[in-house]
Picture 1: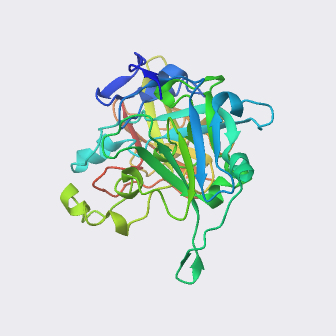
Picture 2: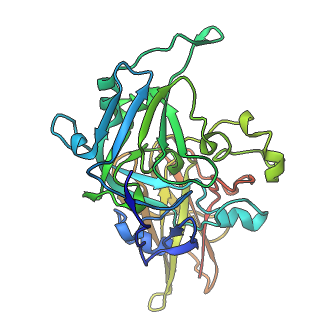
Length: 374
């Protein structure tokens, strides 16, 4: 496919790696916007960013389908295809990796707490495309059970660090779920999807970690197995703490499941001492796990002996993040002149963000209490 050189990136991001380009905003800047502006959406890449010609870019639908299809962006925008918009938080599995790495060394980009973005995505439901192509059951069986089908997403369009292409997959059942809102997206926040964020087309899988939201998608394959790609099989998995080096992990990847949803989490984004009142204003965000969106957020300044409710200032639908704030003052808390504040989130089913998060060699899924200082 034709492409130009790597496009310019937002100047509002803190660069974690230049080649490939990986950068994130500060959490303090993020929580000022319910819908994350383009310039504050983090960039996570396993290869160079390329700007493709949207007029000629196509996605191939193949595998266990009755009819192979090739679709361009302008074809997907045709009124015959249903357009759906969904607000969903895109989140890197390595969010807060620097905090886990402070306990013991981990492998990966030393992300802080800015690799999350809450955006309004628009495109065609993947379900509609797959039903149009028609699902064809394979003859193969696994033991006594019919082979479970998966939908593999691939991007051969750009180079990749660890494989010949970037790939990921989700179960076919989720792809066909009307309520799962899985999209072939071509817009973000009402604008054409930019190269930095996977344009002309990317996959949106609300509720799953960003590694499954394949950018620059050019092949969608219905198959009888998960994606064989490096990033599905030998990365983005939570290994037990005893596997504490990359060398030990080499023979162990296949024994553990690929990550899907990230755990419930919250982050203290900013803490401001208000001299006039002596109170402390705390702002942050929370992100849901696999069991429903955030129901409430609490903060503590005494290591959890006393918890104070935070006010939820934004939440939109079941896939969005939650923005919250809390003002601690002499009327509701003994606020020390300097100190530490922690946050924890609770979801709709009562699951509580834990105080500690178990270490793993890739530094993924860190979700200990959020922490801030003043």
